[in-house]
Image (tube, rainbow, N blue to C red):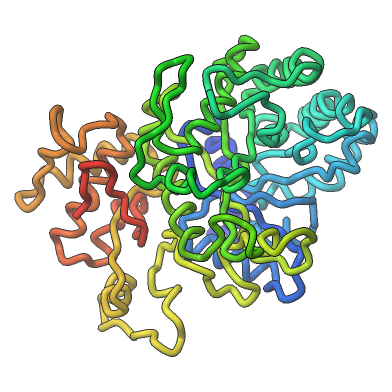
Length: 465
């Protein structure tokens, strides 16, 4: 007897999601923050379908537990981080309320929707609210206990997001520490909880804020002279690395250097006030594209080399109802009609971003790659975020075994050997195979582990064909 598809999904999805949770955050990945403070935003079901099928995004952060949105992501496989609003956090010091909150807002959707985290509040550690601050860690503990009660603690982690305002400095990363009064009373118990449960320390990192004309190149990953950390002697060629290393230094200073760090928010506005430095669509495109490439490359940071970072771009849409300066309403990758503000290199099918008036129908059998070529777009083949490492090694062996593929660049001493990571070597080999065999979309399949991107993965002296 053949089971209906919906039944198979209900049976298999919890198993697959548990395996995904076990893999941990070290695989990196690309996320987006899905805010809904706009008047012309598309239906959540359309958004979920678009993200799952047409982009490299593998994680979505929701700013509340909206049941309609949670249902929209059912069956997509996308990891969903659900934010508990700050106003709810003090009530979660009651274990009874925490259990009820999980029963009503998590358990009904977790079977079909890949809820992977509960984020308790947003930037609570820099709120001038003593009641909220003191409630943070007990609330996190109670939510974890509530997840245990419904057997969801194995795949749903509990964390919270932090602004860089919780640190004393980010300009000299090695000297960074948590602000007095927060370090031992709030942050240390929080880090102890994260270590015990295997959840990451999540930081909202924005090189855009505090920007000056003198630091624009440093913020945008452009070629620059770099900044020397006087304490460590390390040279920083981009501002995001300095911010992440400052967080790492502060965490390590408290004795929790093994706790993973994830970028819960980063981004750049495409428009702003006349007095705001660095706003513009081209700059936003460059920052987000370079941040995604850099954090997923395996290069790491000066203090945390040879690793990838999970990164979430803020935000998915421009939101015209947000208060504050013009820039606050223009952080989106997309407009309300789902047309891109700019191409950040997150599309799996490049033709999805060609305007309707200029869209070219590909010849039969050519698919996305032909449409991209007809529209004048360059494209590369790279591994999907979180792709299985054994399959990536098989991809390297297969691609490099072809006569048309020369993998000397990723062998010891080669120009693309560093960083010595499986993800980086696989990207080079898979792309070289794809480019050498006619650039057909099916030549980037690699057992569903490859994906086409419009973001050039080249770095330093390593140039991708």
